[in-house]
Image (cartoon, rainbow, N blue to C red; front, top):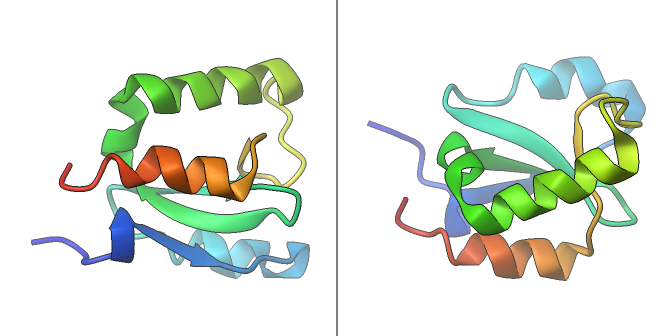
Amino acid sequence: MGFCLPAAIRRASFSSSQASTKATNVPKGYLAVYVGEEMKRFVIHMSYLNQTSFQDLLSRAEDEFGYDHPMGGLTIPCREEVFLHITSRFNGL
């Protein structure tokens, strides 16, 4: 039916040389985002996009980066702890 991901997200380290292979490792119905100063990669369920608190993060990303994200993917400009706190409330979606 779906993928069982701890806390509904999966984290992986990222380097720009891995961009093409990482892009293919995102399951259908999920989205890769990059968070924090270390630009850690998280794979989140698409349903997160409907959540008001996640939309606030997306607005911050738009304000800071526009549509030109430095990692080539969606970059969320917040600390990793904040991102984990917000997304932990989405368990069960």
